[in-house]
Amino acid sequence: MFIAVETKSLAMITLEKTRYKGWENCLRLANESVELIITTDVGPRIISYALKGGKNVFKNYEEMMGVTSGEEWMIFGGHRLWHAPEDAVRTYALDFDPVVYDWDGKTLILRPKEEADTGIRKEMEIQLAETGPGVRVVHRLYNHNVWDVELAPWCLSVMDRGARAIAPQEPFGTHPEHLLPARPLVLWRFTDMADPRWTWGSRYLELRQDPERDAPQKVGFFNSLGWVACEVNDALFVVKYAVHPNAPHADMGANTELFTNGDMLEVETLGALTRIAPGGNAEHTEHWGLFPAGVGSGADTLDANLLPRIAEVPDVV
Image (tube, rainbow, N blue to C red; front, side):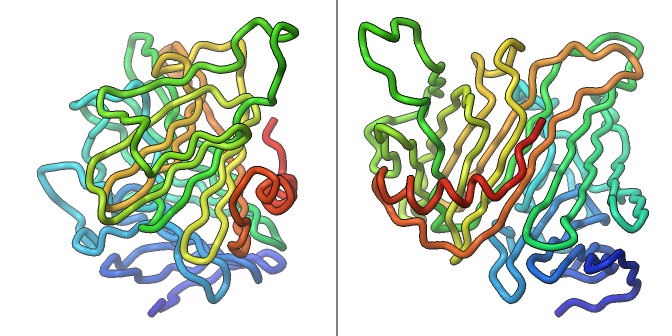
């Protein structure tokens, strides 16, 4: 149960300080359509995103809820910000410290402490639409070192069990009219393209989470269309993001990655790989939408049911 201890509002937007699953200082940002829960005791994480009266689409690791200290990094669940390329030490910096936040009635800015081992400080800026399900999340990485660093903002949404991610294939072209390749497809050493959780369709790429299959699966690609959708817990989660076709990217050119194991499915987007001078920052923006589930399957059905939902989420520029 949410216990609100502070409320500020603009039009139909409310921000409440609240308890959530053992954390005393979470924030509930809501309008008449959706609500988000954001941690400030740790993280930060956008730990919940739900339609009003609906289920959270994000995975919560129940055994980690309320934890505020530890010797090893914890995933917690929800939506988080990392920096790519992935490294076994740098990427998994501990984030148990309290998060400072600012709220001006429209924009919520979350500022965790600088990572001691990397000199990088993360920041999330969240805006909720006054009406409807739209959310704008700006992710920033600040370089507090005295030397340049090269990295990419890496935004990961941990979806709950049973999730089904849907990404567009590049527009179809014929041979010999289209001789050049349309996109890179990046595979990890543990990727098994024959795994039944994958659907390699002509117009859509799909990955399903299956609690009965523990083996991890992952794929990355450059997505020029700039969107991914995920159906889970009776809702359709849509992410749209800026595309930078002429910029370098981590992970062999990927700006989109999908990962799953026996617990969850991750929808991951990446900004451009950027050399950041001391005092500078790199930025990557996602726009979210949340709708009732029911887009169906098969390319024609998805064209009819999914694409109109994608169009409802604002484009990112």
